[in-house]
Length: 536
Ligand code: MSP
Image (spheres, protein in one colour):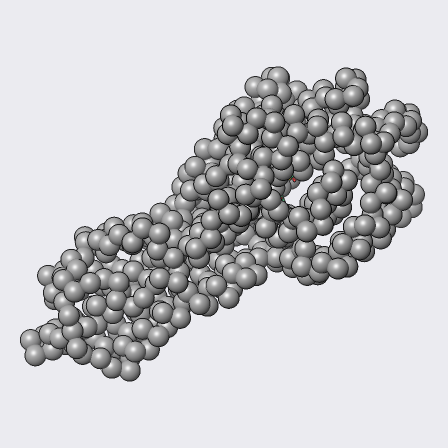
């Protein structure tokens, strides 16, 4: 097998329920993977869960169960959600997996043996509430510690440190000579500045078991567990077959087929320092060459009333009419607009790299207008008219006009435009073009008016040609939509009674895929309207 296009997502903390921030990232990466496949690439998509660390240990304590039990229960909620939303990774990460632990320990042992890890005692300011040592940078302008840190006391602790500082000059040079490591480019500039600021700093990679037990034990000192970021970042390699000692039986992919990663899909909060500094330096320190450094795609945040949606903070939305029970819960949104309604909203209403605000109104406008009024309506009226005027069968026609040509041209241009947008993963533009195409097809029907023409049998060829055009356009839309809305694509194809050829790629899309004599299927509403009751 040749090199596969390798996409990963951040692995989500299993310290609570999944929210729309998590869902967005997984849907984005899933759509990228499906799109790449449709464009003809072999793709491996890896996603999963970050199960260790202080946050998880604390949540388990609060819930009064062991971390193992807690993590299983939360992990299963994530798994059920991705299943419902048709997020279909090829590989699944759980950091409690022994195959992963072995690789983390292997890397740590190598770094320790090479003298890249050392032990030292540090006296510093420790936040009891956040369970971490603080830097001078964490102080408020007046020199005090902010309320978010709770009780802050001076403590002394021995820990292991990784000589990050030995490699920051290398990272600087790498970033300067590889300006396309991070997308969007402004994030790479930010990162470069952060690297300059971090020079001279090493990374504490251990936590004493006296305060954290829920982690991977250090292979060279059993009194400590591994700092959760060192553990978590390694997933991208361990689940890609890095240093796999039992390739015949491990069930993991082959490192040579996957690495380097073509897109680590992450949110902007975890670029600096984790993915932008620690991760490339960890790889470099373990001997991964420059030409095998991964690429990173940084997306923005879903906010509510301007504030990041997160687990810790509940923000009340002020929708006048509450149709969606909980706006940050992906399940609650899917209950109202379906899995694809949610996928469509999260992909169409944000530009990749930027932020966006979620509101009930935006979700329902996107659903009722774009999906129900434009796309669903087009399919429904096409199938109904075709039944009424043609008995549901598409026949050979000769009638043509500028309007027909305009629709054909717009539809066949979609794959090329999409490939252009997807060079920078601008999925919202791909979707906007498809919806514009469907809008144009609706206008085409309005203007050519088959419902009027059909009154005179002399117009039979003209009517048949109009139907043929809209049905064919719909077949194209279904393929173009399939990465973002896989269920909808299948439902449209079901109603068209059309199965795309196996292995069809974007480059194979041609006008005329529905053959002469093709019999269309039964019309069924694709997106039943969600009624928004009047306020008051
Ligand atoms: N466990 C770490 C990542 C380890 S990766 C080796 C973590 N987990 S997280 O659950 O807090 O976040 C997982 C991903 O969801 C991150 O990429 C984060 O940026 C993303 N999001 C979390 N909230 C978000 C929004 N409100 N909006 C968009 N994505 C955000 O960080």
